[in-house]
Image (cartoon, rainbow, N blue to C red; front, side, top):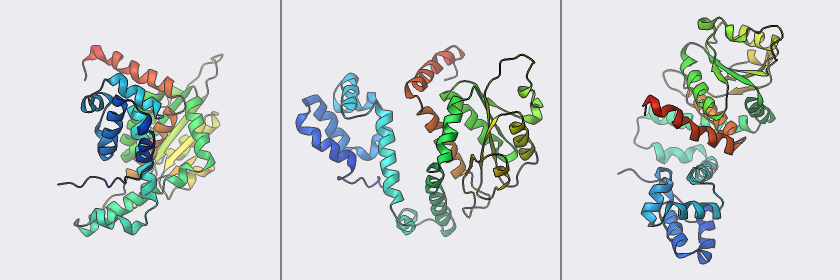
Length: 292
């Protein structure tokens, strides 16, 4: 049997719930008790499932979550995830030993290094350039995303996910389109444009020239890359690194995937109501295609 995460009864979330218990209605108290007893498994719950298990209506769940400071289950899950990550960051690397016990030594070592590489991303997010980059991604009229060779799939996935949060995100494939997306007509209204370039060792031959051309045309540029890249700083200060050397047979793209996911999350957080409108509208567009 898989052990559940060790949730402390003194977590901030649990302490807040216990403090407000005396002032809750009977229905709200039922929800609070369920949350306290099942904190470790709340990532698997929805508003509907929580209502069913607590024996209350979904409206009651929604009102209760707002009362304790959350705009729905997604916000609650995000807060719990952040708290657990913060707790984990306070551990020494050796504290992970119990988690990987029983695994082959090479796998255990790789998992530990991968976890440490992901946690080290916090240094990237604390840089002033991070806020500048998120602001640009949110504000520009058009955002292009490009990546090459083995990293192209990750770049395409990121472009699709980013497009859920904002309009006019385009995956750019210079070999396929010949950069026709960048051609403008005389008298055309200028549009603010941004390129997010994703590249890792061995660096693609076209990466640096495209970055230079991007700057020549007046675009903003963000580069997401590995820990060894130095050429990108010649074109932009907005360079963010994800470690790739974790001891596996091939370089790991895990930390970079996490970094890209954090970018999507941060951009969505610029205007949560507007982002929610896009997510709510998306299924209606897909309904007639019968894809899901």
